[in-house]
Amino acid sequence: MKLHLGCGQKYMEGYVNIDYPSSEHTIQQTSVADEYHNLYELKYKPQTINEIRLHHVFEHFERMSACAFMASWNSWLIMGGILRIEVPDFETTFKKNFSMFGTKHEGVGLRHIFGSQEAAWAVHYEGYSKKRLEKIFTAFGFEITQVIPNDYKNTYNIEVIGKKIKNLSITDAKNAAKEYLADYMVDDSDTEKRMLDVWFKNFETQLNKTFAN
View 1: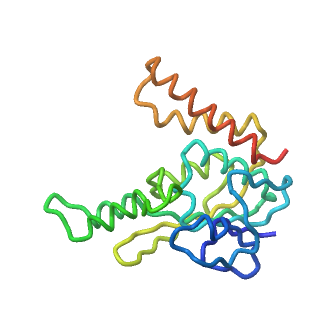
View 2: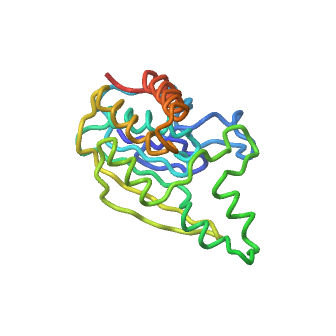
């Protein structure tokens, strides 16, 4: 089985195309989805999925949830299974659309980085780059096999294709998440440590909903 999560209007043959129903969308009026699900509640049996792909969906997840999904997708995928994620390329979008003198594409760049914001879900919670994607893929048991940049009308994107090379236990997933999230700490002060604890609890809440065990 191959999953296309958050399919929108793009139907992919050979995949189970999954999305919110049209009633949850503001601009999209029809749906091509095979199934309707809330991705925050979606769960499959361990090692039963061959491929998972998301195009301009991953950036809509809070980084704690993104970690939980990476661990959960690892648990769904067979060994050697494929994970494909395409997101806005934060670094390239910033470099191309912003300068000290200003450019006519600043608004487009800001929208691409932070989301279109016409709905509660249409917000981007993270700015990904090749380096950041490689970090999260590696942390959760994937080996990068291909990195594909692309652009469209002054928006710049990056797709990373990874192969599952390690089965993660719950303990492995928690250790990986704590290390990954710690990278966002400003320092080792008590306040920052409490912040990390909050992030980690949110991660655990999502992990318990979607991790296959």
